[in-house]
Length: 206
Length: 338
Image (tube, rainbow over all chains, first blue to last red; front, side):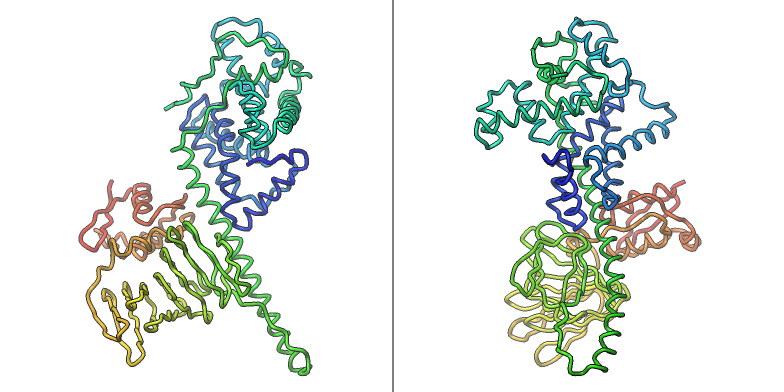
């Protein structure tokens, strides 16, 4: 599970220390907290080929757990894990004689700003518009995966499932005020992370 | 296969108008698709095997360094003791006698403080500590010099000396692998081995010993009995002994395979791998063409069979060498498939 020590990564460092000590619980927290996001990270870069994403995410995680002792906490654990995954994705393409992803992701595009701004003007659109929506959606999911898990979940519950603050509070096991406060922090964390992933995006300025 | 084609996100529909851009974006993306459970389980099993192997490697390296340090410390202590005999006696910490190689389910160690701690891969077992497995737990330990000790479900034991353990309940399997002999003491008798593989299981009614390779001696209060490979001895609480044959492979030994430490395939010769398969399964591994056996040492394997039991590892590796196998009674015959 990604922790809320978002800035210092102290929670990530502690998790890694416990994994290095052989704590099974720590491994389970690590896997359950990171695999789904990593799988989606790979899926978006492998043309939504589920088998390839599984293969690549597994290969990346196997390397990560062998190199855990080199983690210094300079980036979040998920970001660090993603660097292994990027390498595996490149290797996957190289092995198959392909020249990298054919779908350029928004986070790597210089045209993102204009693209996002134009989203509201898009109707059903043609293939290019659908692709653009897909890319932005992938980036949003990546951002949610980068957040502490309670933040990502709370934002989804609020805006996708349409739960009230009271209902979110029940799911989180906290009071309504604490849930409201967490949602505020989650929105801010989302804006920060999204801006980091796509620095040219101004569509999410508060 | 692409189950994500069925995602619920309607990326083609008009975006929801919302004053909060975060809300707008999150709605646009929709719920993050969950990872199919069978994919997650598959990956978790493989990654956990890699993690466990890494933890065990680091622990072994630390243990080796510690051993060297302990030897040096012991030499210094001897010198110090000789030159300053009135020095206050220092109680040394309990010596490690084994390291955990693999855990399945619940397993704990209880030290002198009486507090049970969960055991994980790479943990050290010290002299005198009680090691126990739960109703769903199995454990593989590695002893200095190479012997493998495996604990079945519901087992409790305590190392009483570096190569001697008291089995209080449940069952252990010992594969000495040419290392030092291990003595297993039970309430009903003591089992001593001579370069072998065997299982000892205790119950309230007595102790049962099954020998898979080599020879063991079962010593009761009044006399001792020998047993060779393929023999099963049962010493009842009233001192009566019964003896019967036991198969060298099959169901009786399944639990041993289930907790077998993974084989490190990368860079190892094929002959070594086949030897491991034979040792773990109890099968005799033979070549259809005996002339090929000599060449097996020159075939170097690459990749990983981490997490695979020996029979599945064999099925995975042979095709990569252009080989296949068939069962012929107690023997697995390896032949050229090309």
